[in-house]
Image 1: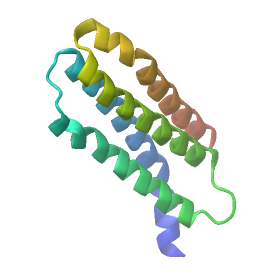
Image 2: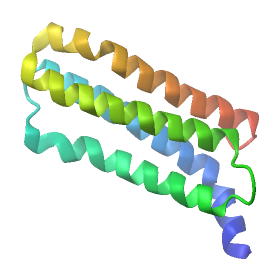
Image 3: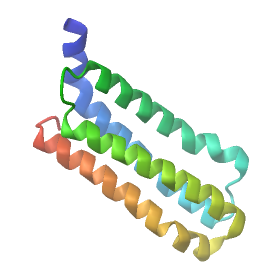
Length: 129
C-alpha cells in the first residue's frame, strides 16, 4: 500500500515529463528529417521515449484501483498519436526532405502536441500538476 501511495504522489510529475519528452522528441525528429540528417539508424532515438511512456502508463494502469484517472487515458492517447507520428516520420524520411518533409509531418506533429496538452489539462484538473 505504501508503494502505491508513493507511485501516485509522483505520478503527475512523471506523466507530464513523459508528455514533454514525446513532444520534444517529435519536434527534434521533424527537424532532423527536414534537414536530411535522419536515418533508419536514428529510429531508436524516437522509439525509446515511446517505449518508456507506454511502460509508465501500463504501470499506472496496473496500480489504479478501479477507474483510471483521465490523465492516464490522455497519456494512452498521446502514446497512440506519437506512434502514428513515428510511422509517418519513417515514411516521410524516405520520400521527402526540406520543407516538403516538414509540411508532411506538420499534421502528425500537431496531433502529438495537442495530445500532450490534453495530458497537461487533465493533470491540472486532477490537481496533479
